[in-house]
Length: 245
Image 1 (cartoon, helix red, strand yellow):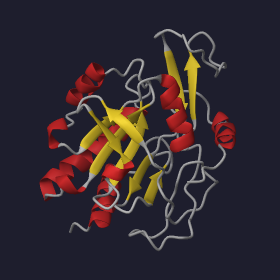
Image 2 (cartoon, helix red, strand yellow):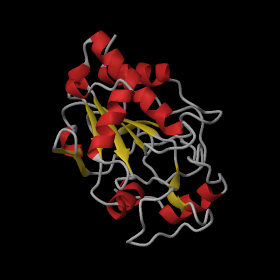
Image 3 (tube, helix red, strand yellow):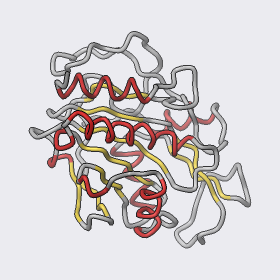
Image 4 (tube, one colour):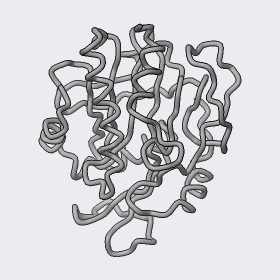
C-alpha cells in the first residue's frame, strides 16, 4: 500500500513535543472509497496522516509474538476476523501507553461477556524490544489483567529496535522518535547504544480493521487530547464491525 510521507509526519510531530507520547499530532480525515467499511466515515476531517485511515487497506505485516511463540501476520485475519491494533512501550513515562492497552483489555473483557472472543484479534506492537523482553511482556500482561490464555491477544515484538523502527514508520505509518536521556534534542541513535534511559515520541494510535483488511477507525490522540476515545466507544464500534448486538 502507498504510505504517505514519513518525513512529513515527523515534521508535524515535532510541534507536539517529546514528553513521552506525542498525543494527537495527526487527524483522521474523511476517506472516499468507504464502500468496504461497516462504519460511516468519521465526522471530522483533519490533516493528512501517514497511517491508514477509514476506507484504506491496512499494510501487510508479519511479526513475532514471543509469549505465544508464533508469528502473527495480516493474513491470519483477512477473511477470518477483524482486529484492533495499538502501539506502545512498557516504559512509557506518562500513562498514555497503559491507557491505550486499557482500551484493548476492555474490548477483551466485553468479548468474553458477549461471546465473541474468537471473532476479534487484539494486537499490541512494541517498538522497544531492547527493554520489552518476552519475560517483561508476560509480566506486563499479568499486571494489567490481560488474558493471554484467551488466544485473541498478541504482543508483537520485533527482534531489534531497527526492525521495530522500520515497521513503525514504513509499515504502520507511525510517527516515532527515540529520545535518549543525554540529549533530548538528538533524535539519532547508533547500532550499539545501551539499555539506558530513553523514551519515545509517538502517535497515541488505535486502529480498528475489519475482516477484509480495511481500516474502519484510526483513533489518534486516543487517550490524551480533546479527541480522546473512550473504552466504551472502541467496544461499541468493534461490536458494530463484528455484528454483535
